[in-house]
Image (cartoon, rainbow, N blue to C red):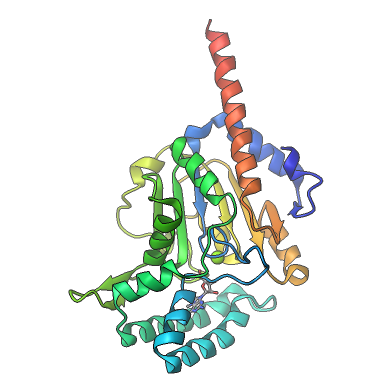
Length: 305
Ligand code: MG7
Ligand code: MG
């Protein structure tokens, strides 16, 4: 795991614990592993190659509104200005933030529904959006699919937009990838008429919003170990409710406010990647587990002989 050490973007509060978790995951093997990942600014880039800010899935509607409805754009901007600083405020507790997040999502979704955008418009703007998968994300997703490791994408963004981005940038969505998110519901004229419930916002990404029988359930049965990836402190409980009793290795991408947030991220995530727009470390970890599993299976073969 050489990339974890002497790497200026990698921070760990307890490297021994990380080592211990990796060892356990290596012993248990790839068929005990699943990945749970956030989408916006985790699977997707926070900044492009020129250092310019990228968009979240909701950001697509800022672009739609800018072109088609400037008044609506102004309303989105006002909401963003008010609520984004609350979302990332280092002084407020999660409990204090939750009512504001519900207000933000409710108002934003109501504006989207009122504007009666068509599926075609939304997909067109999504295809031309500044939402890009992180560098080497395609390679990571490909490797997970190849090894039949489930990837649960758990997002407080908009699932239909995630699907379009994935299809555009990966060609197809692997059978082992599943998206839990807010979905737009289209009417018979293909106009966005509602959003699915329960609402998923930054701070309720846990069992409370995973309702009903999930189609991926049979793929994750027996997968006791989890690698969790997120960029918000709200992402650290995404494994609660997905039944697993083994190891959870949590990787946090710290994209903004490095000085004020690093200590909190180190308390919550096993590995914190500061200002890193790549999937290099997760790929490195997967490679390490693959090689260990290979050596493990060789050893057990030798033992049986
Ligand atoms: N986020 C949440 N909402 C909005 C919105 O209406 N507009 C924009 N531009 N961004 C929004 O994946 C969820 C992320 O999306 C952002 C309702 C939040 O910052 C959140 O972290
Ligand atoms: Mg995010």
